[in-house]
Amino acid sequence: MIILGIDPGTATTGYGVIKKEGQKITVICYGCILTPPNIPLAERLEMISTQLEEIIEKNNPDQISVEELFFAANTKTAISVAQARGVIMLSAKKAGLSPFEYTPLQVKMALTGYGRADKKQMQQMVKTLLSLKKIPSPDDAADALAVALCHAHTVKG
Image (cartoon, rainbow, N blue to C red; front, side):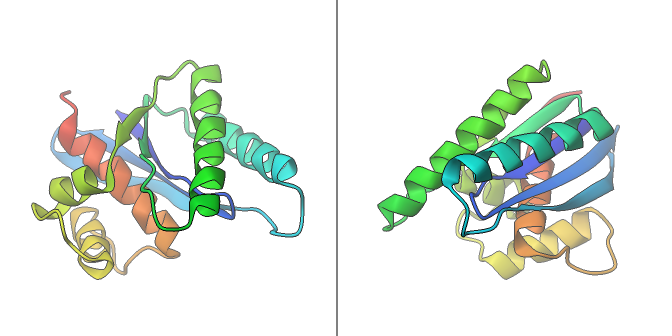
């Protein structure tokens, strides 16, 4: 099973593609979709959609997992991230996939067994679980791999 994990954002959307074969999980690819801050939001959302559709077409995932929105103090940021999530969900559906959603707490619990794990602990677990030589960079890509791993540990098959 090929799983695409996504860490949504307007400026940076992380993605990570993994392959699960029985108990073995390997990385196919990971990275970030970056949008420039000085262009209109609609154009940024279109860039996310276009690049995500290319990632889906190239990697042909069986399932997509997306991190749910975590509401921070900054409402403006939360709204733009929600808009990016909408574009991500639509891109998944256009590809014939129904996205699975996980809260940050669910992702932390699946990887570390501890809901208050910090970013460093999460990144170390991503590195360890995927047998990588170093922690994936940038952080958004590591977060996307964590979402994919959460799904891999949650779903049967």
